[in-house]
Length: 429
Image (cartoon, rainbow, N blue to C red):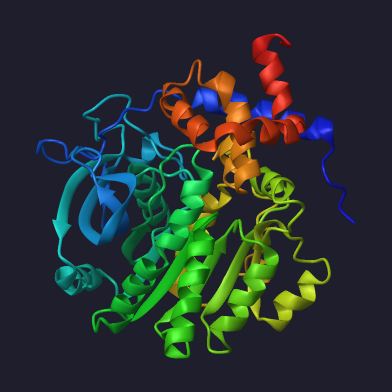
């Protein structure tokens, strides 16, 4: 049996979190304001995507959508420019250091136009001309993603995969703060009908031949719940949804079993991406009270091996894949993995370890992994970070007041997780 990390290991994870958060400060806002029409920079490429969101519109044209919840699903037509491959590593997003960004070196927006739901079919008609399979890839992002985070990450995945797909991003109301786990988690539940509506519209669209759903981290809960709802309403998942890829799912194993069951025998082909060294999911399990997370199981150990075989779920074990992500939680977007994704989307067979032969930061993970207790842990760890990270400082007071008087008990119960970085910054006070 796998031994659970002790106090020293958890303290080490907390320190790693602190260092990662500090390193990520200072990203500019308003990066989605389309740049002036100066002509394409040499060597650049672009990704055109449809974006559907349950977020509330922002008055800032460079932000487009906030982390608050909207009244309906809103659609946009975006085009993102990607710098030349010669100056970027596959799997990376190169953020502008200031606004406006430089298309020769940065990810920048070329177009950001609202469209009506009734015009989505016209968008798919234009986008499908390049792909004989008339294939749509729907991406559902994870915890702690602002609107621009999700847009740029999806553009990177589509570009690096080389897949001939029509890219559709579904982005739900995440506040993009490591302290807003509870709000984000409830926002996935809030967005279930919205994602189900999008998927149903796409599968009824005569321009669309098939749909693949790719979900990451907390977005897997939203994807599974929406597909489960569809199956319950319609007695099955729409046949055009042929593949569902679950990347590092931060989903309770028992809840996942229930969703698989409710989708029925005619459900899409499921592919599970797991990694034994995913520290984000390790912290998630810790905060959830040792609840097994689907994305962190050992697919070769029982009872999981027999279950996955019985349920006909393909597995891609990424444990041996190197990652620039300190927590090994974003391997699904790495260059090698997205290239494989693109090849499999083109070829058709499900992804699995046997066929291919390849073996958000600690606070965001702690906060992204549980409810009140996790929020308390995140607040405790973030307190010293708020002194030097402007984004954390901006949201810390609000979340502290939301937690209220119960924070003392919660912080006390998570001392093992939060104590080390707190003492490191305060000198033991």
